[in-house]
Amino acid sequence: MSAQNSTGIQTLLDSEREASKIVQKAREFRTKRVREARDEAKKEIEAYRQAKDEEFKKFEAEHTQGNKQAEDEANKEAEAKIKEIHAAGKKGQSEVVENLLKAVFEVKPVPPEKA
Image (cartoon, rainbow, N blue to C red; front, side, top):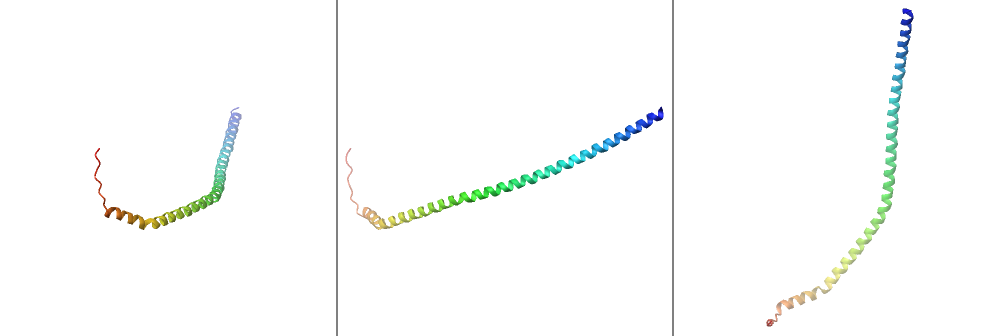
């Protein structure tokens, strides 16, 4: 009976070792698969990010052209107004200087009125 028990115990120990090896292999496989899935997910995320970056740059390029055109038009209008103001200043400049000099040199004192 002791030999049977010993054989049974040995069979159980062998089975336990075999089960332990199977569980260890399953853990290694699971760990490996998790790493692969993580790496695959990172690649997909990076590809998605690049696609969205390209899409944004394209959108930005399309919409900033309109802003650039509007900015250029505004600058042209501003330059035209500045030239117009300078021309008006030059046109009346001599007359204004003459009037200022006349006011300074031709003094006409007026006595103060009593309140």
